[in-house]
Length: 338
Image (cartoon, rainbow, N blue to C red; front, side, top):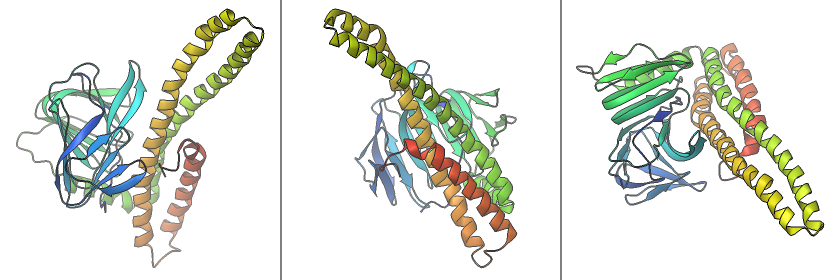
């Protein structure tokens, strides 16, 4: 269904206020899928997206979403849009994620904590009301601003964009030079096709770049899961001591121990679970829509030449990446995810 898959993990921080963790589908053109609770079904106008749900468009389909604050989200053809959550410095954050394709945002009046917007690989911060995020299959991204201020960051470098400005970020690189949008028509399909053609012209080299992007997700999973493991071990120790206090009959001392040790530790464990889950699902989307698409395409291209060195080298590298994915990510997924 999806002909062109995208890869950019752009975090866009819209500093205006809280986002409801749901969105209504108010308009559909063509066949659009809704993925919810592990099931994929046809989407209809009036359906509601909640945390964990995705809208998937095809070659000739389009969906428009609305939120109660009068914000609109336009999911263009060949795109995957998901509402997710992660834990940030200021607590739990809603993440509006574009795994594939292009999505346009126009924000109404927001209150409270700002949402984040993501696409699989570069990080950016956005303060604005109207902008579009494009993501290409080779890991590149492009941000185009209609109004407001957007700060696009990658590899420790940042570029500020105002109205009618844009910037491209190549996979694993710092943002390029910003450009003016006035008098320039952006053709996402042509841009993405050009990127993809370069990718498949040297699939082994292209796969190495994608592998590097996947490693960013895996590094986050390892960091959070290592901390989670340490805290769970500490919790086991606390529980053992707490049980001793309860068995001794000193209920007041046991209650005080619980409040001082177990309760605050549980508050720390929740965010760690959430972030391990978030990055695991992000890695799954990357593997499914980016790496998987490339594999299927190459398999078709070399169907009559399975022994071609280009294909066999690609296949060897691809299997190695899958093995790494299964060891690091799969343990944190459930049946509904896969």
